Length: 116
Image (tube, rainbow, N blue to C red):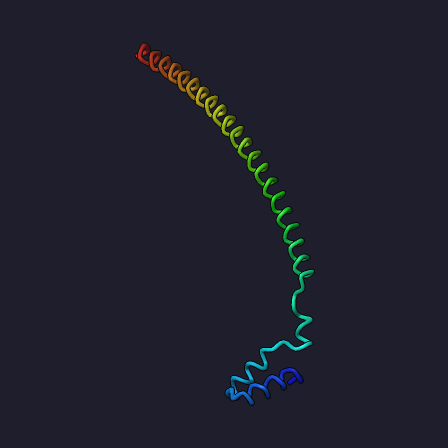
């Protein structure tokens, strides 16, 4: 025990406080060694400054993310348009090939019927 803690303990004992309670109360008092572990106003201002810098960085990141998301939405819309165009072309080609195949099969069927 440091001298401050011991003095407080002795004073509490003389005042009639229970021994365990006096020890606990005396130990809870900050000693000179403990005081250098406490945050000062300057320490808190530094932490506040760091937090503001982090907040600023986060706001920049948020803006960048929003811009990236907008770009992605635009790219997705362009891809959808391209896909729809390609699908329409494929559909058109399939119809042409099916009509052509049906015409050829009809001609072959007609030729077979005429031969028999």
